[in-house]
Amino acid sequence: MAWVAWLTGLPGSGKSSVARETARRLEARGMRVRVLELDEIRRVVTPSASYTVQERETVYRALAYMAWLLYNEGASVIIDATAHRRRFRDAARALIPAFAEIYLCASLATCRARAGDRHGGYAPADVYGQAGREGSTVPGVDEMYEPPLHPELVINAETLDVKDAAEEAVQFLEGFQADRARVLLNADDKGGC
Image 1: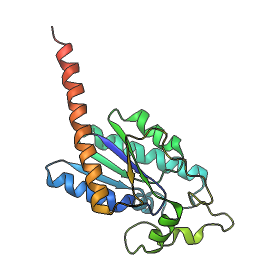
Image 2 (image 1 turned 60 degrees about the horizontal axis):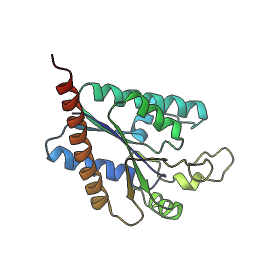
Image 3 (image 1 turned 120 degrees about the vertical axis):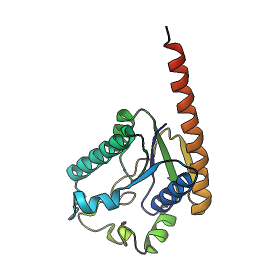
């Protein structure tokens, strides 16, 4: 039973680290999981990213579509992307039947400190260093970040380390998968002759 989970939160809230650790743990338990890290995908789709409104609309639609394709092939997907506008995440929810939003909640001050310590990976190294400049579009500073109204899971990324946050996500996703399987089983039982 496949699903798609979108990890959202401010830049620096720990999305990439939690997504990778969650996927690693689920794969160790025999689950087929793919992580779609938007910062990695941007390097292919928009190698000279401008972060304009139109570019973001296109990139987030493409991200939701990629997740939908993988979901339809039976892979569970973890999306690692800020998606500072609810409409980006809502579009994926409307497209994908087994969708969950996981909100990594942390203060802007904590996220700034973490983002400043980034080394390696695909995420911009100094995302908050660009904030406040003319033309800058950093979510949470220059652009409003719209937190989920009704996420399926909220993880306190302010106080939990990556391992504990990933364990919360794993526990939730295993239960989410089991619930989806029960719903489908009950639907099949009602459709007999």
